[in-house]
Image 1 (cartoon, rainbow, N blue to C red):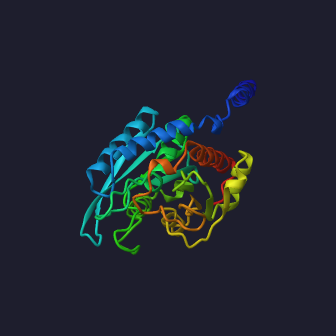
Image 2: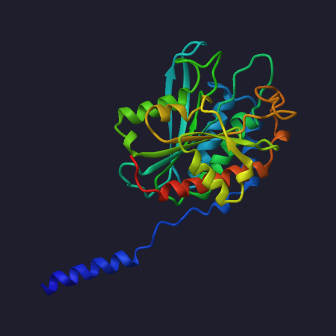
Length: 301
């Protein structure tokens, strides 16, 4: 009996002395550093699927994730498109020290391809650049937090018009892979960033995690930059929601020379001078706070 009591005492003391998981320091997100990542991506020029620019971007992203200490791999696959079969490359960085079971992993995603054009030089500083810089910086800041997967999707942009074989290629492949490996049950939530660098920032929030996103923006003091969006936005969060995973899209779809015009979107005017480190900070810190809020929620699936 005494031996049994001593064992119980040891277990209780060990439990009491165990340190709780370190909460993400969202204030550590550095918008200037994220902006430097965007500068590097833009220096590669246009980055549509299959291009040399995209290959250089993939190498850069992988290197940054590895230097941050994440387990990094690529998902290479071929899928049909209106331009014929194309090879796509997703990049996934996972924080170490996980091991959680069902409903434990949060996916933070973005696309890193730019839309394919033949008549303009489209470098996508905002659309395809800003969110990548922000997610790379998020990975640096949260590298010691277990059960986070940072996914950089190829093929988000459609060639002609979004459809079953055009657009969202990387995220669809990612979700189907989770299903095939029986891993979909691991995913607690998905947070998507897209077009979040606009100097005149006005982020719309859409998906099934709208209220937690607003709670996070309020907690970091940036609530005024976020507003309700329409659920009709087709983006890389949609394959996750269709699979039953709670997801949210943070996107500024008001990117132009005046409110409501959106005349910089998918044009040669989408350049570095249109984005700012401040906007990257606002969204990056909010997204990190959202990660922390979701991690602290009890399992709901």
